[in-house]
Each structure stands twice: as structure tokens, then as C-alpha cells.
Amino acid sequence: MQITDIKVRKLFDEGPMKAIISVTFDGQLAVHDIKVINARDKFFIVMPSRKNPDDTYRDIVHPINAQFRGMMESAIIEAYEAAVEQAKLEAAEEDPATV
Image 1 (cartoon, one colour):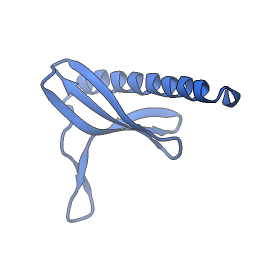
Image 2 (cartoon, rainbow, N blue to C red):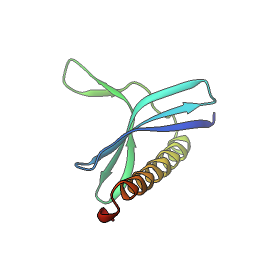
Image 3 (cartoon, rainbow, N blue to C red):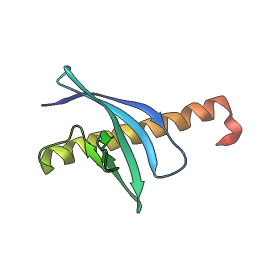
């Protein structure tokens, strides 16, 4: 299974959550609402989840093994970093005094 597209849906400046991402696999399956989190100077991903009646959360989709999770996490964080750089360039073009 290959990642064929990563879309950075939303970027956040404040707080530990930095982005919401959608990932497409093999051009046929999309997983939405993957979160990019920054905690203790490290980026990691959190898979989409739902709240249970006992106020705990359960992933509704997740990688089965560490190798696939690592590959997915690396690709998502790379896409997030590229989106942040693109946002900075766009902001500089709009107002050169902010750079």
C-alpha cells in the first residue's frame, strides 16, 4: 500500500496540535482527520478517533505495524513541514515587512 496523496487541510499556530491532514492510499482509500502534534520538541501523528460512552477515545483507523506507521508518520510530517514553509512564503509575498 502506497501513499499517493497527502493534503494538509488546516494549519494551527497555537497549541500542540499543528495540522489536520488527509492521506490517500493507492489512489483509492482516503483517511481524514489525522492530526500532527508537537510535544516535547517532537512531531508525531494521532490517528482519527471517536469518543466512547465512558469518555475514552478509540482509533477508528490505525496502522497495524510499526514499520508502516513510521513510513506514514515520516511522509505526513514532511508534508506538514512543506506546508508550513509554503505558508511562510505566501505570508512574505503578501506583506514583505513581516519576514
